[in-house]
Length: 231
Image (cartoon, rainbow, N blue to C red):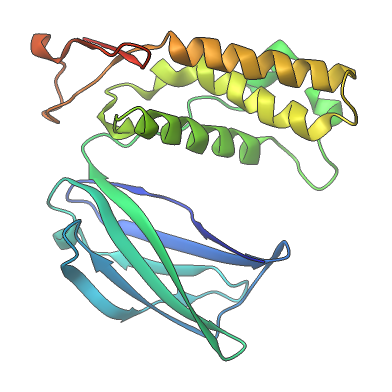
């Protein structure tokens, strides 16, 4: 099964956007023989069209979108990458945002080990850290925010998401550890699954709804059964 990954879906307004994409089949990264990219604004108008994408020896595809094409704040602009593997053409389509504030994960391995020091000894043999699980948890958290009708990049301070992110990361890690229902790791998985839900439902965040970089008094909003937005 083909799995397509866009490693970043945000770019700061008026900055260059280093676009990087990877394709996997059965867990192995594939090496396209050729690739091109088209970038469209949210209305579907092409900003760059059929530009050549560089393909590294390992298969990673890269293209730098010039700053001249990121001067407008966008939600759900479109990246289309057409690539060829074994003489078969594929098209990868992904959305991205042009933002004022680019948020990123606000935790590292050491934060996790403050809770569970034994994590150092339990990591999978093929990995040296939990960066992959942290990033996966962060992507899920961003998606949950979007599902609530909010744009994650409007958060002035991404550290507001720190506690929910920790619990979601533990949920992912312990889900991968447990062997059977009721064992130690399964219990921890279920515990942090619930803690994430509780923390996320109670979240109060500073949110810049008009994207002027300032939290104004009239941006105080409470959404019933959703995220509480505060100034």
